Image (cartoon, rainbow, N blue to C red; front, top):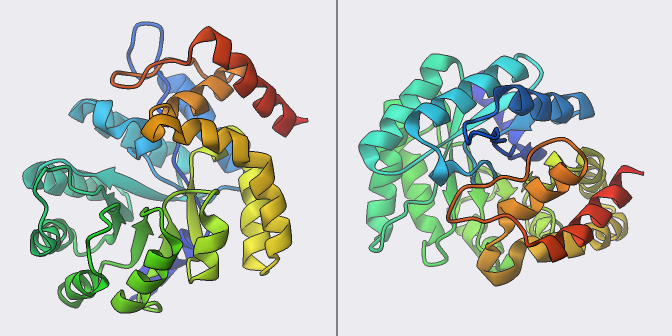
Length: 302
């Protein structure tokens, strides 16, 4: 493993922030607000950011917008943070996006779980191998949401592609994660709890060393408090943080995570940091539910 990849592995073992993509009144990406959201994360001490993640509404962005979000993130992050660019869709698009990220200066890419009604385990390897082989100089992080994928398939992918250095694991089953990580090679990859703060304590107990976060857009200190506790093995303190964020994350997870992004943007809107606008198939929160989100966000900022 090269020194560069070791640095990237270190970057993944922390709070991996998934910034929102703010929209202006006319519906376009709000560049100035996007930069402000990023600077707030960086100023708080966040050192890994993922443009074009699900909290950034990856699937609702056009190709030009995905490039813009990547450019804005790389410009703001500079040397202050590692940038993990989300790529996906069909194989040619995912490969082109990975190469574009490389050409813009990104050090690594996260490959979204393939969205297709028919995903075979062998085909999953082929999909990710196509992306990883196209950018051998970049770190590659598969985003795994498929509970049927066996750990042996990830090991097979890494046998072919040495640049597969980490895994964002987002199957809501800590026991399955523990088994998957050990079947794939616990020490071989950096394991990132891809279901954010609610699952971080249980996943850390099974071998994860980082977690993703959308909540971090709203309250960076809360997410950093949790990673500090988990790194020191202080699970009672981590669970105190868990209690603080529990209701917020329950609202995001309700109805199959229908309001996952909506709740984050509503909290940001209540703090005057971002418009609440989201794109279909997401929708803004009804008026009667906004007060609860605003109260939670206000409590975190005191």
